[in-house]
Length: 440
Image 1 (tube, rainbow, N blue to C red):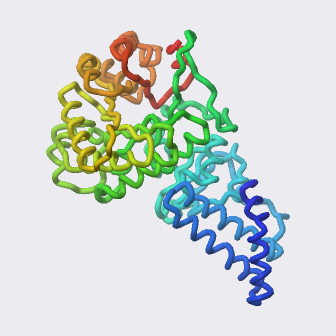
Image 2: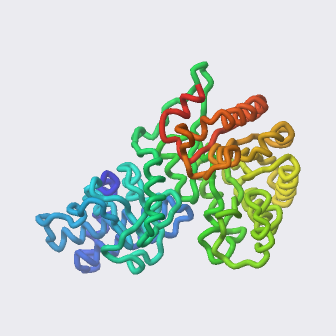
């Protein structure tokens, strides 16, 4: 509540309220609202979503001040303090003063319509290990008290009245998820290095622009993976150039000079956008995914490349292609980037990398490295294709799939080949200390 206290202690806020009382003869309620609304509006109209989220704090202050003016006491327990275990909170908006009343041991998840990931409520939820989805339009009308819900905050999905099979799958995924611990309240990441003194940078993965605040909260070295396909999946039509460029530039500006790696849309397979576009049909029918899909579709791909290049003016932006199959498809994609750099008159090259997550790319790594600036090993998909197993299955024959000899050998081959280039390791499920131990 230090943020609220700071705003209330602002001399101009108090003096302006008093001036409105004496000069304009407003009631106390009207004077407070007259001061709160313009401040709230300025935050709402800010170009950065991180600052837009502060509008909720201003609104919260107004509600609390008005409550005190009405003489509302705190004698009765707050309803959020006495929820039954396993509860999911569903609300249009959850203000910080309300969220602080939550008994987090009884709350399984939070679902709201207007509370963004950059808000103090979302930050508080993360610090307490409570999964939260903050942008479900009409959540309170779609869901009713007593509904049985499965809330996957990582995927941003809610399953209502799940089938037994869906419940079993969700339980499996939840058991494999790493328990969240807020180990870095000071906002400065601990150093990470191998036993022989090689420093390793720690980067965050995000799917939305306003999630970039998480990297700043934890003092990470940057954003290692911006999953841009989430800008496409839940829309009725493809995002245009301006929409994408704004989202990418916002993250770049917020993190600058830290790097942000934007992975171009990884569509195809099980990632099918909601919008109806007949030009996509051939690519989907062919079963293409990742870079192969993007090259076949081409129209959205070119727009996205232009947007990423344009956003590079705002910070340290890098581009990465998913599901690279070999040097040929990477070379085609890179040529599109070079053309976009010239069209946008960027004045500097943009670093372009390849996701190594297929056996084909691992075998062709030397040729890929000849034309790429960096590579990133996607261990989940690599293990899936190497071992011919469900990519969500985290164990096989009693051991984690990453540690299967064939997966380790493929990873080692890429790392050895990339001695002169930057190489990173990416996965969704570092459940234990085993991964850092393997890097030693």
